[in-house]
Image 1: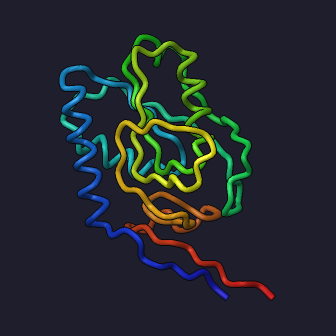
Image 2 (image 1 turned 90 degrees about the vertical axis):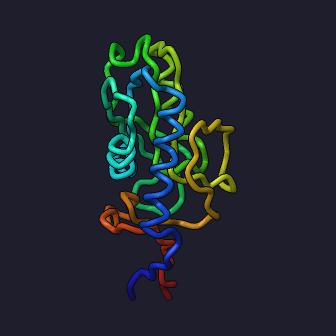
Length: 179
């Protein structure tokens, strides 16, 4: 039995959404180059497309790695930071955290806690996807792409067990029922 992929968001819709988010960031930052912090691994394709679409100069790009899923389809509820950024990269800077998806809010809360402890001038959140039905902690999303239903998704950098990241569209993943 194999996984069933059901189309949810097309490559064209993703590209239009990324361009809109880049325009919104350009409008707000203009001549203030932000530090852009991407959350690995899921946001790497979105991050690359977003910063290429931005007209605002970027001060620097940093990457962090958070984990709450492991190899399952449901968050464990415990977020661990496996890769951090140097405090001096964040201190006194305008920072934009770039996430692929915000669901429970636990990963964003952990990232904001750590990045906020480095005393940025400002700290904002940009996400391609928002899944509010799964929210466990409140999250303010400054730049939100698309709100989606409570389904497990893959594609455009988002994986299941390290599979499906390369897909250009976003799909819901339906697992076969094992007897």
